[in-house]
Image (cartoon, rainbow, N blue to C red; front, side, top):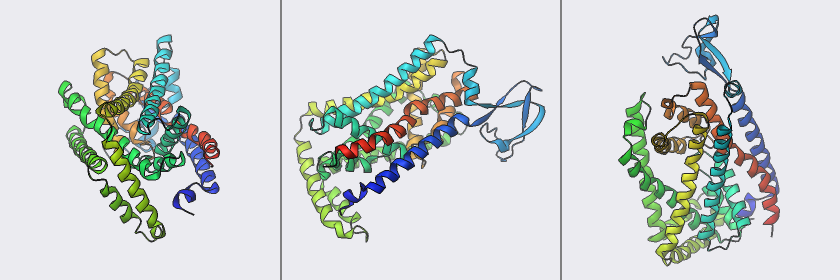
Length: 385
């Protein structure tokens, strides 16, 4: 049995679905029931700050940082408590519907891009399955890993030769990184870096950000050279991986994949410039739609002007880098923290920021865990042959 068939064996599929649903349910439950501490008028709270973790900072999420005290100046509050205090107007609901539509737009542009890269060999239905399962894999993977490795198997299952599927995934990764590399200079051209980072620890974050940007730029350049100039690099890399003892017997497959990548590379070189403009436009549309989800959520609860919305878009480039390098599945935990830190200067209370961060993840992250677990069995049956 080849690695591909082994990866899609019945018991592994069932295990993946079960784990996915358990993780999805646990993470949603943990997000909506998590207790935070908010500052209230002196004498009207139930807790006091005692710096239990000895870091000289008030950590509203850490129960060890607070002590139960009659007439304290902090009170416990859940996300549901925070949302119950909000006046839910028609404008609030329209902005939240807009956030959902932006998520749909994000996936539409992803499907458009995968269809362009496969020369429309994938229909819209097949493209939907591919993108939903790709997002499902990304949601279960650390941000630095993503779902790219799984995407190659998904495309291969949709009758795309594995080597070409690998080349397509490399192209999508290249385009995603290219979008970031191209847009960052524009962001810093119009927004000063002091407005994009939280004041506390700003210098360290600036260094972290630019080091991350340099890494992404290097990866982008390497991917470009691999797919358009030196596809044999991918072949050599595959052969190196398949030297591992548990993969050695399938080394002949690596050679075939390498040949497919080289063939796909030749096809990509022959594409007209207009084709790559379309692919980049689809990439641009997917990322802007992704970012506008946060803008829509913030506008649902805060009164923001045009310039503030542009500033929020700029801040999301910083937020995305933090999510990319985190080792947790889907950037969970770090994403919520970074959301609050980067957007804390827009006049919202700490607990409301936490609530909006959770709402953002409920719209943009958790649905893929459930959709993927539901879609996966149907897709396995559909592609069984």
